[in-house]
Length: 341
Ligand code: NAD
Ligand code: UDP
Image 1 (cartoon, rainbow, N blue to C red):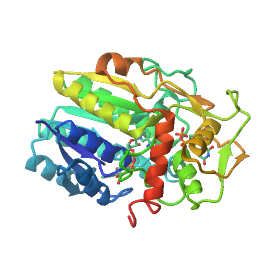
Image 2: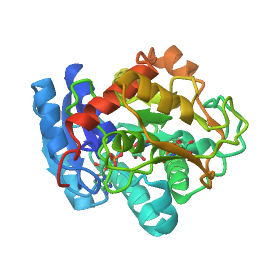
Image 3: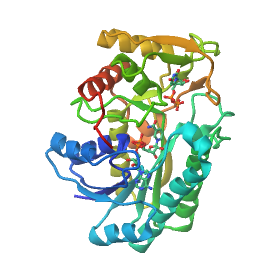
Image 4: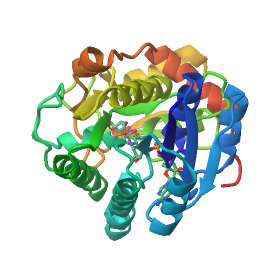
């Protein structure tokens, strides 16, 4: 069976993808510097699947460390999750974001070229559609103007991958544009474990429900949407992980590809709908107030997910209720996440 290297694989999406790849029979190697994770997530991946993962602690932008990993293993494909992802932090520390996110990408491409590894899948984001495109977003739309340095790193990395694929007749690239991943593995053993005060909605909701945060502020209720709060395309992280398995099957089955896929459900939900569904499904209160808009937020963001169905044979299976139930199951079983990072 083929061997897949997950760069940044100890994180939230990488750990769930590791489970689904192992369940599908792939061998998995993880490299991570634990900038935003810890090795415990991979221990739990092993206990969920009953299979082992080869784990390396290294910075993905370190050429020597990456060459060692590629020399020691026969790698068939790489999935590049490694990156810094906090939007607000990227505004405060743009240089660190450009350095980390772009450097990891360049080092991976250089090392792959040296060791003749020809397949890479990249964690991109719906943020690259920018402000000017109209929802639902289609892969054929041009990348737009991003509202923060994090978004620009994704846009620039997509460009780097497309240019590299143009120049190398054997290099295959799949760019996966994620919408809003939430939820956790149904075992409640792996999930999202943000450091400090969460920026994203669902971890803020679960931490409020568990009593770690006093009150959720819903950012704005005067948007031109169904109930005035922003709408997003929330996707269960296990559905997202399965999308990666389909993308791996696809990239390994084809000689040369360079394709973009939206990974979303195609259905937008508002912030108020998320809070109400979470409260109903889990029978728990989430203290919340309505506050000012958050700068940079778009009113609506959701996918046209037809291409992933047509080409990869992938579509989401889980409901918003599943997402809310599994997020809470992870939070209440692991009130401190994985513990000390
Ligand atoms: P995460 O922070 O949980 O995972 C990223 C992992 O990369 C972490 O384990 C971190 O330690 C590691 N990492 C960062 N820099 C590294 C480096 N230089 N060398 C080695 N490891 C490094 O985040 P996630 O939510 O799992 O996201 C995975 C990818 O998907 C990221 O690239 C992110 O930008 C992208 N993405 C995430 C979302 C989201 O909402 N979670 C949405 C769109 C895109
Ligand atoms: N949001 C909110 N309160 C919070 C965090 C987020 O109202 O504490 C809203 C935010 O305005 C957006 C949605 O929840 O409309 C999703 O935000 P998140 O940061 O999770 O993802 P984004 O879509 O911004 O990448």
